[in-house]
Image 1 (cartoon, rainbow, N blue to C red):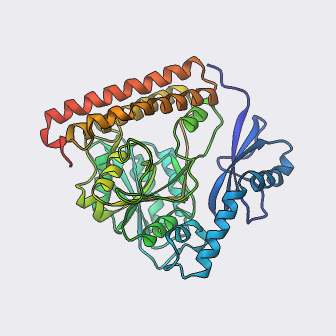
Image 2: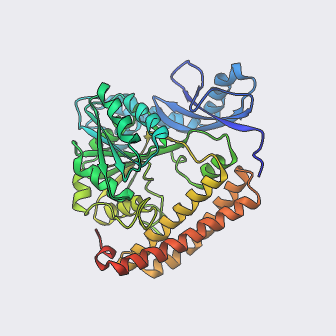
Image 3: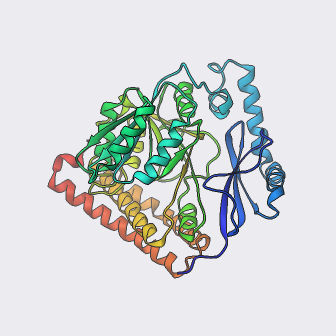
Length: 431
């Protein structure tokens, strides 16, 4: 399949800054005719505007004008919350005001944060991710790289070299494959109670750890904090398909979730996959992970389930009576797969992980079959998203095949979890 000639350039615009629109993954090029710009106020993401690139010398002015028209309500809402936070001490401000404005987040003197990146033989992406974490404006901070079942010494050598100039960086190795095992390994070796997870294909915003710490500080009952995952590049049809298929970067209002007072309207809640966030950007209390028994080793990339360990942990937090806070200001940028073959592999794995996650909830009795049946109407929403993604990526027939690939992954993942759980009866219970 031939990719379309035109590409979408991704930019970032701060309304309280007179500077230009900054490129997220590179400068404007001749192949770009459309710009998608993430608009922020006080470094809080407000929303996107999309507009023609040309004329490039007026892009910032035109993007600002468009944001002021189309995002006016959100801008006013943020300004009102900022005034509320300013009028009160940060500790006594309402939750929404306390977590909405990053320029009021403490960058030192608060709880320490350990950032964990689990990786396997992907040094090119890892070095970019680590460089972004090194630029964050928060302390105390620990950066812990978990090398999962490596086949080369590349990751160890890279991290060791970076650690020579940055004492915050540490290396550790988990020899058994599987993302859940790597996450558990990292949690066991983390220095601080607050643990932030991101991936080796992301770049974090400089204010990311400060937003994490603010989320926990504003709500003593919060066991987990998730955040916005924005697309860093939309050059190819594959990237645009992924961006449209998954709603990682669409929510711009802080939210809270629990079993009693903060519930999502979905008929599948709290089992609805993805409503809480994603494994590429979340933070959790170390004590909560330990109390819940760690991440399920059957799930997760590199394990039998090939994914779903993040969904499972979010659900277990909620079912245990905990609370999850979602903060758009906890921002990371994700590099999607740029070619169709890699996208297909990723889509299959995502489906496989979802199937394994759902199978676990049915096997353990956490989810009743009737609940899953009521949620089948949600299939229409998923079908609509896949169609929209196919149009966004100009995939045509390939888009339909990707949807079928994802569906096959769901079935395979469910059968896989059932089989593995039968082979190890204890694994079907909470780990």
